[in-house]
Length: 404
Image (cartoon, rainbow, N blue to C red; front, side):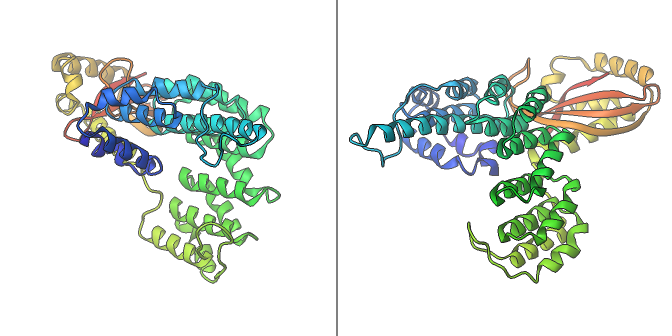
């Protein structure tokens, strides 16, 4: 199981909250055959353990993991209560309360893992879960993480039918992750509603920091003077994550604020502001997900070869998976036809980017699909789709290219 310990995806910081139970499961496996052991755990009484085993299967390249997690997401049947404070002689009404809570917790965890895995197979089930008020907020966020824009109508519908600020915030956050402007507006509006409980507004601030959109900067600067110190601390951290230098004067002013947070890990506004200033000046800004940003750089470098008409080299630098299916001569002929039909490139910008482990055809692996909004000499509005995969040597290489 050292393959799981060293798995690049498992080492990503987004797994930090779920890494420990997986490591514990690894210890239990010992010398046993890992896949067989993990498949056995899918029948455990403990639903969370089932999900952990399914996650481990996916990380090891076994596609049975996602369907198993989807099954747990959809399961609303009775299950044993995991809370050890509830005994067999506890009052029946208390037992029923904790039974319902256990079901919600397990289904929430399944939705969380599906977002982390980023697999498009989970999209239909998560869309259905947006109708369930007990877990709809996590379903919305997971849909945003997966990055499939087919979820946009469902998230917009969720916004239209809900009035409660908490699920609306996360429906907006999911939309914003899918590059929908309406979603970003909802998150910013939630921040600016001072009548809401400060914890909901803090969630909005944290979402804005993760999104990294500079449209949020003026709003975050304003709440550096909010009445609640936790809001001010969160705003400073979000500004540091976004990395826009226009926030520096306000953050420097916040250095005078020595107020301590009222709850959560103790810190001061001043300390959070100082850390944000250092982050911006260091050029750290929003931490990039190398699983997406590195492929974007690779795609742009490869497209430069295509733009320059160096089709032979562009073929040589593609993934072995592609080169094994198409001859260099056919590739050069196809690209030459494209060149005659579209002409020289005028402009190109990233429209969307998403990770997946599976394509309709081809083996399981690490893929990133990047859509570009492009303009060419003979076609002012065009769409280019570049799919990259991480080869065994860790290098991102193009495996598919479409233009229309």
